[in-house]
Amino acid sequence: MNYNWDWAVFFKSTGIGEEIYLHWFMSGLLWTLALSLCGWLIALLLGSLLGTMRTLPNRWLAGIGSAYVSLFRNVPLLVQLFVWYFLIPDILPESMQTWLKQDLSPEVSGFLIVTLCLGLFTAARVCEQVRTGIEALPRGQRQAAAALGLTTAQTYRRVLLPQAFRIVIPPLTSEFLNIIKNSSVASLVGLMELLAQTKQTGEFTANLFEAFTMATLIYFTVNMGVMFTMSRLERKLRVPGLIALGGK
Amino acid sequence: MKKCFVALLIASLFPAAQAAELTGTLKKIKDSGTIVLGNRDSSIPFSYLANNSKPIGYSVDIAQAIADEVKKELKMPGLKVKYNLVTSQTRIPLVQNGTVDVECGSTTNNVERQQQAAFSLGIFQIGTRLLTKKTSGINDFPDLAGKNVVTTAGTTSERLLKKMNEEKKMKMRIISAKDHGESFLMLESGRVAAFMMDDALLAGEMAKAKKPADWAIVGKPQSAEIYGCMLRKGDPQFKAVVDRAIAGLYKSGKINAIYDRWFLKPIPPKGLNMGFPMSHELKTLIAKPTDKAAEQL
Image 1 (tube, chains in turn red, yellow):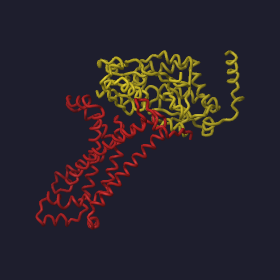
Image 2 (cartoon, chains in turn cyan, green):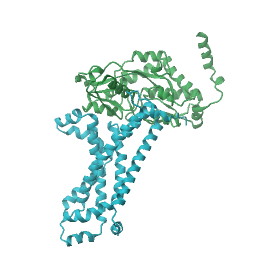
Image 3 (cartoon, one colour):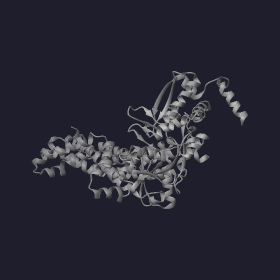
C-alpha cells in the first residue's frame, strides 16, 4: 500500500492562528474527559438509586426500575442521542427552545445534551450491576438486619449497600471505561471531542492513519489510567473475607 | 502546437504500439475482470443513493464514462463494474489499499491529498458560500458576526470559517456537523443562522428542504475548489485512461448533457430541480482541463 507516513504532522500548523494539530487533540481530550466524568456522575447516582429500587420489596418502585432498564438498555446509544439532540428540543416550550438553541453556545448546549444522554444510558447498565451486587449477597444478611430491628433504609445503608458496592467495583470499572469510549458519539452532533478532532485532523492533513493512531494511544492511556485507579480503589476498600463470603 | 496535435492523434490511433505491458491498476482490473468505482451516499447531486440504493449523480455519470474507457482500452466489453461506498474518512485509505480503483464523488483536489493519492482532470469547480433563511437578514460573511454557523466537519469551509473567525474576531459560534444532511438539519431546526459549504452542495441540500423557497444561497465565494476523481499515486498508465475519458466528455460536449441532467432538470428522489446554471469557472475548467488543485493555478 502506497501510504505517505508523516509523524511530524502533529506539530504542523493548522493554519488557524498559532495552533498546531496537537492542540486539537488536547482540547478534544479535555472534552472527552469532561463528558465522561459528568456522564459518569449522573450514571452512578441514578444507576445506584434505580438498582436499589429494583431490589426493594415495594412492587411499584421495583417496576419503575425495571421499566427504566428496559427502555434505556434496549435502544442503541446513537438513536438515543439523536432523539435527545434533534427531537426532544423541538417539543420543548418556545422559550426553552430559544435558550437551548440560541442563548447557549453550541458547545454548551451540545455538552449538556450529550452528558445527559450518556448518563441516562449508562445508568441503566449501572442499575443492573448494583442490583446484581445486592442480590449476590447471602439472604442471611437481610434477614439478620431485620432480626436486629433495622428498618429497610437502615438495612440498605448499613448492611447491604456497603457490601454490594465492594462486589461490583470490577464491573463498574468496565462501565466507566465504556462511558469514556461511548463519549465518542458526541462527534456526531458537532461536539469537538477526541474522535471529532481526530477525524478533522485526518481530513485536513490527509494523514488519517497517524491521526487515528494518536487517538488510539490517547484512549488507551486514559483507560489504562482508569483501570489502574479503580483496581487500587478496589484493593483499598477490600474487606478481608467479604468477597469470598459474597460469592457463596 | 499543430505538430504536437498530429503526434497525439497518431499515438491515439495506435494505442497498442505504445502500451505493450499492463501495469498497476489496469493490470489489476484485467486480472480480476472487475473495476471498482467509489461512490458516496449523500453528496447530492454528485454521488448519492436514491430510491433503489443504486448510486447516481453527476460524478457517477463521469465514473461510468471512465469505466467505458477502461473497457475499450482493455478490449473487455464484458468488464464488471462494481460500486463501493466510501465516506470522507475512508475514501483515501480505500483507494490506497486497492479496494477502490477510482473514486468520483465530491472530493476536492488539494495539496494535502496529493501527498496520498493522484487526481484526474478536474470534474467540477465550486465556490464556498452560505445557505440561510431568506428572512434571516444575512447577505454576506460579515453579517455572521456573533451568530451560530454550521459547516460540515473536515471540509475546507470549516478551516476557512475558523480562520475568518480568528483573524477578524467575529465571535461566531461554529458547529461542525458530521455530514451535509446533518448540517442542514441544524440550520432547519433553528440551531444556527447559516450553513457554509460548497455552493453546489448547498443547492443540493436546498432542493431537499421541506420548503425550498424559504432558503437562499448568499455571500461572496470565500474560495474556489476543483473536484477531481481520486486514484492511486504513481500509476500513469491508468491515469492516462481516466483523463482521456474525462477529456473525451469535455471535447465531445457530452458533459453539457450530463450537467443539464443533474443541475437543471428534476432529479431523484423528490423530483426537485436544483436550478443551478453552469458557472463561468466550470466552463473555463471544461475548456482548459487541469489535474491541479485550485490553489496551484
